[in-house]
Image (cartoon, rainbow, N blue to C red; front, side, top):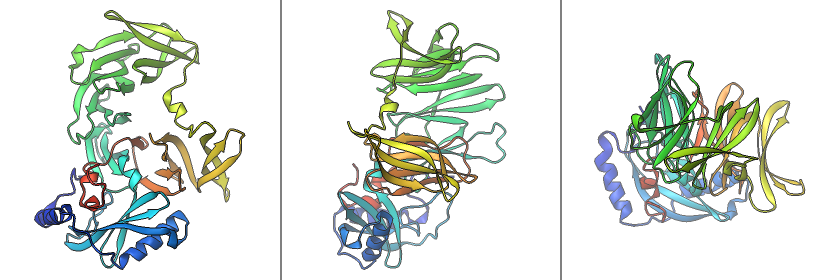
Amino acid sequence: MHQGSWLRGPVVAALMLAVLTAAGGFAASTPPIAKQCQADLAKRLNVQVASVTVASVQVVEWPDMALGLPLPDHMYAQEVMPGWSILLSAGKAKYLYTATEKFFKYGGPVAAGALSALYVEPVEGDPNLNGTLIQVSLVGTNAVTLIEGVSEFRAQPNGSILATSRTSRSGFDMLYLAPGKAGLAVKVGGAFEFGDAVVSPDGKQWIAYYRQLVGAGWTIALNGVDAAWTDRKDIDLPAGTEPDRLFWEGGGIIAKLKADGKTAWYSLVKNGDAWDWKAMAAYSPDEEHDFMLNKSETLVVDAVTVDGKPSTKVARQWFTGTEKPVATLAGFVCHKATMSPTKRFVFLSGVEGERQMSYAVDIATGEKLLSVSGPQGQEAQLLRASPYDWLKHPAWYGLGIAGK
């Protein structure tokens, strides 16, 4: 079981003392281990060590050998150790390291702290093939259990999550998890099958394709996140169409449907108490514009071959077609790419050999952060939210960014 907090075991009192000490703001002189951290970061970014400087140092008493950055399913010796949080600067970015006198751990770019990765960890022997929805930092640390018993999930732009849980061979529950509410998912619906589902930008409503019974046609359910399933509004799909994607953009609902094997776009417009479909000649979802970095450049994620192996290339493409390489992930095959809201990171989910993997690539530096590795159910997704209590972690205290 992944912990919903970094406080655990018999070292709570000692750690709380460390937090209070750090929160008091007493800074440390630069420890010798910082030089090793600088060399490590220079290697990661492929820059000269002289260009990496120490921005700030904070004394922290670590509760165990994880140094505040535990990896999923790893056991760490429960030994209180004095050490430091070290913030390094390289270019315009800052990077977190945690350390003792003898060794250090890398916490990644500070800018990555506002994001996390989601994946379903399989549960052996589960009769309904459900797993556990886990949230980790973009450097793959500080795992938190969000929802038990998950079949599939859909990360929402506002940091909430919609997930389905298989209840039997002929049924699913739809679960809603509000932002920052780890372990407190609520059931908002139940049907034979659910399709794509999205939460409104204000976080008050949700909408999903669903089929209530075996053999029934597809319908759209519209409801409040706090409402009972019986309070939903059912909306029939336009005649001759099948469900694909749903978008809640610009205050309106857009449906991507299939008609005679072709894509058909419709908007859903409220007319009094009723909802009417309005056919659209075409539509370009917001997510398709995410990869436009500016008026002249687009980020491209393409399949390439490296040393005879399928690989992935990330590059900035000028409007003329000229490309500037960002990073190459040798041996990694990308299945889906998602851009972060600030367009600083692109999140890649796919496979490396026979192993499921997900990376976050820093577009500014080309740094590759391994976010998720190993057996999963549904492929990992980017969540626009920090890992649980991440910025309240003692690693951040006194560095000028805690609590932000």
